[in-house]
Amino acid sequence: NVVRVEGNVYNPGLITFTKGYRYPRYIELAGGYKSDTLKNKTYIKRANGNIEKVNGYFLSRGKNIYPGDTIIVPADPDPSDFDITTFISNLSTTLANIAAILLVIENTD
Image 1 (cartoon, rainbow, N blue to C red):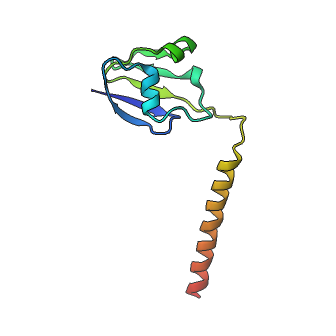
Image 2 (cartoon, rainbow, N blue to C red):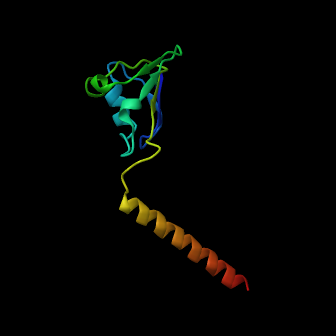
Image 3 (cartoon, rainbow, N blue to C red):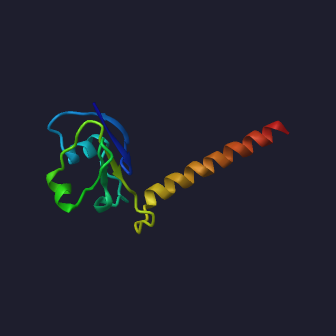
């Protein structure tokens, strides 16, 4: 009695199935879409193996979800947005790691 949400959401994984919850609610429970999500390419793999595309109408109104379904949310492989905050965060983490490695090397000599 679970629904799997995979892909470009903040908290992918298994979510307990709740009768009456529709597609948008499961996306919300998975933390929501990340900024570089291809929302119109999202699809649902039903428990019986059928694949259903989630189109614009169902993005706003909600598509029925059933136990065992998997919602797949694809990321844009070529995002046009440059997020300066993420870049600086990643850069500072990398520089801190390099500094720590250099300190370890210096202390072993």
